[in-house]
Length: 169
Picture 1 (tube, helix red, strand yellow):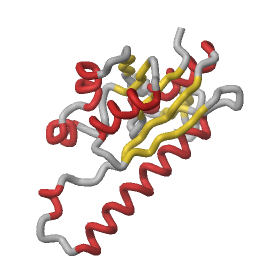
Picture 2 (spheres, one colour):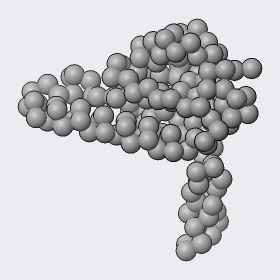
Picture 3 (tube, helix red, strand yellow):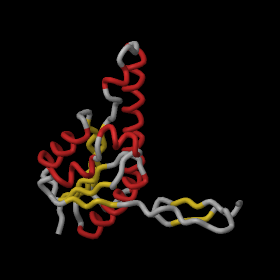
């Protein structure tokens, strides 16, 4: 039985599915849920020679994006689940491990991928790192790919994770 579940989110489909799974686990086990996200700024090499205003804008945009992602995640948590949030300004890997230790969590739930193959190739996989360095169990969640419809209709998920076809197609 888990008492304090930490879920790492970044706005990716896999992280969204991890959040749904973590909410379900926290609800069913009457556990506390902590939602973790980090402000991800581009590596220093990407802004060499860029003016201070551009760097400040990038940092502000990254923080606003992380805060929006966090608010949207909290909105999905039912009233009966105790939830807190952590928005880290540290690099994701050490920030996540620090939160595991500081928060005395007993399970980490996270998506299998972040925001894409290029970012993963440059920065490495956070889930892979957590799996090998976390002192607590790690649940890695994969998002289910969107169903394909022969009619060409589009599909999307609602807040519960259920698929719905767009009838207008």
